[in-house]
Image 1 (cartoon, chains in turn yellow, red):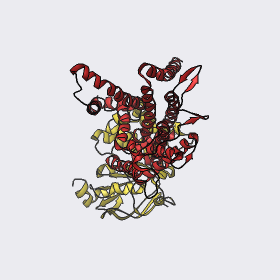
Image 2 (image 1 turned 90 degrees about the horizontal axis):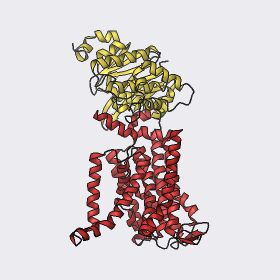
Image 3 (image 1 turned 90 degrees about the vertical axis):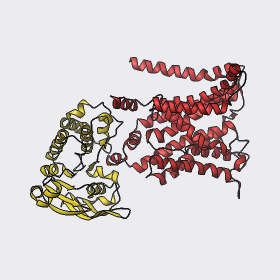
Image 4 (image 1 turned 180 degrees about the horizontal axis):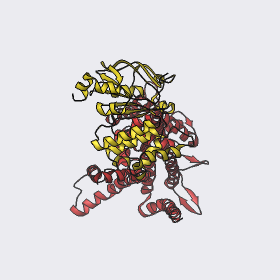
Length: 234
Length: 352
């Protein structure tokens, strides 16, 4: 049984069909990406899985139907979303942001998890007193990632982590993502930067105007002439 | 240890000021000024209530005065000859908090998806709806007595002693306005205490998270719907208590006390004082109650002395200066006169 199983997922914005009944699955321990052009429905798909927007279709995390749960219940089930862009609490400090990630928890391991995040993101420890809104974009992205990890997710949904970042920062963010994956967290990544995404992921789905058009291993997608022509610049 | 001593000293100082304030105002300038202090305490309660909705949870509410109206009319209806009911204040005030809280949820529930301008428009409408209802519910059945308002409301009484009558203490007669002052200050301090405790609680953190980023808050496991409704309910209940006190104090209520300008005034207290910062909001409440009163009494005589006649009507001059002051605050102190530490830090950081 896959960790995440999505069947016939459809999202409408008014009369516009943003996602047209797609199905895909992510196995435990995998790192899978959704790639495609702007407006293909990638972010919408991710938001629908995280229950941030209304959608039709079945979404299962193991054997539990997520599509029947409210958004705030998902983190307790092991699904964490790192939203697109500046998804941090801008006027809270870095430490407070990380603490919010463990908002739903009342177990005694929070301090240990915080120490682990600080190992993974040493900058967040150095800047723990700083107001999140004053961090650079890349650091904010790291903080959002750290906050999601404080929820101890089994499945991490990452929405465009490279967006708006300088190339060097993109490298850094992806190093961290790789490290998170190495710790056994399953990752579903949405990314416009297809080359980058396919280099870190094992499998990928190509989305085009609301549908999945190609599904294959990352290596095959990187070699696929259609993918190369459309998303990798020839 | 030093810090603790400082805090204790500060607390004692504030207590002393609060104790003697009405005597300074009353003996120095007349009892009308004690009345102004009474209103200042009421407005501080209102500002703290609105601060929960606007400052903590970041939900712009332009109809907040409606909850003040609900509390005031509940008191008026349950303790006046209008229905022949004479419930005691200790029963009505908590009920007023609860009923106003319920109205808060009534406003909150349909507006959960709205933010910013859209929420402001709906709450503005809600405030007007309440006022217009109060204005028109005198027919077919006379419930609110319409624009004439409800008069001869029972004064608030403690242990059988109505606070409207002066009492003798050691041979000194203490007028009712002083007694109301102490009651209002005690209740305002209670509201300050509840607000600070809420701010430091899980709920307080959830409110701030929603204010900062609603999607991220949901992703952190915050039930944004319930937490928002709670903000509306808590804020409204403070307004309901203040409204009940207002009705008992004035012994008269009418719809015209609860217009849009009153909502805007309370919002200005929150914004000018410093959104989300409890001491700032208290400061804003005091400032915007006291300054206009001082100005009202100074502007006329000052013009008389300078020009030999009153050139500008003090009332319109007051609004003019008020507008100028608002613009100045927004330009030079956008986070308020006494802002939240974080807010200040962020604004400072952005400049750097």
